[in-house]
Length: 377
Ligand code: IMP
Ligand code: ZN
Image 1 (cartoon, helix red, strand yellow):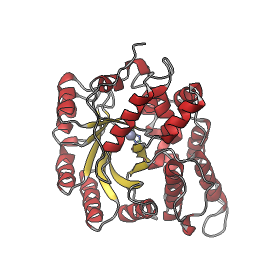
Image 2: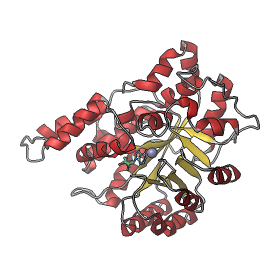
Image 3: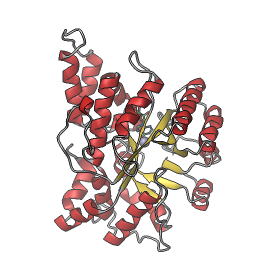
Image 4: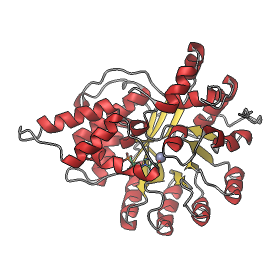
């Protein structure tokens, strides 16, 4: 999948040796949403197949709103703010709502991050080989019930694809959407715990979705149960300036292992995050494009780098953002203003932090004592 924008500009500014350095680093992708990471080519294929391949052999037409949504995704959507991001998903969901199409999409996402499976699954078809973006992937997705899928069968289809890779390569995080009812949250957490107990490759639970939706106090006991069952907990937290500080502190009382974005933490929240060494999943391009952060210069990554706090560099949603994990690492290495201007040794240490924050496969080495020097721009 071609990349554009901030990450592409940073990559282009690097020397061949610097690009090879990034490619050769062991890197963990810990924050990637399945339906936000489908290669655009795969989505186009699914759209084409929908129109010519309905079960009764008749051709069908995509509904107008889905066609409009697809056209936006194909052109590389312009986002005005984070609220213009969530309406991109109905078109994607329309095309990944059966076991066959969901398996196809999952297979393509895994392939784009990790390269082809060691033994490709015949049922999902062959895709052209692409160069891997990372060494290890924790793919996250929100179970969806459709006319052809239940929450359980959705997770089974995704896990079957993930489990084609060895455990040191890929695992699943189950996402809970803030827009869900508490009964659905309860059901999905139970399913997730059951899958873990059956030995399936599920390693954590995520909280995601519209950052201002839902009553999060109702969700608390279910996340507690997931934690007690040995699942890792990651929460999209303080993603917008409107998220109240009280909510952020409430989330931190759930003892999460990692945090997504954590863009607007106040001093009290930062102190807890530092004290408890909670890894912050950093998605630079995502924050810039959704305009929750204006420039790299003022990105909260600088605070964590200065304090040598564990972070993981991640892509979030490569489909709308047209980024890649090597591109996000290029944003660390490139000279300001295109990037943060870190040294190769510093970038290597950041990559090790990401590997150390995996839920699956045990933890690797923690960060060393030296803070990363952030050049002033
Ligand atoms: P899925 O869980 O595989 O369906 O991936 C897409 C879903 O992830 C979206 O519908 C959102 O609920 C969620 N998502 C993706 N990116 C973000 C984000 O930056 N913040 C909050 N939720 C997100
Ligand atoms: Zn996210």
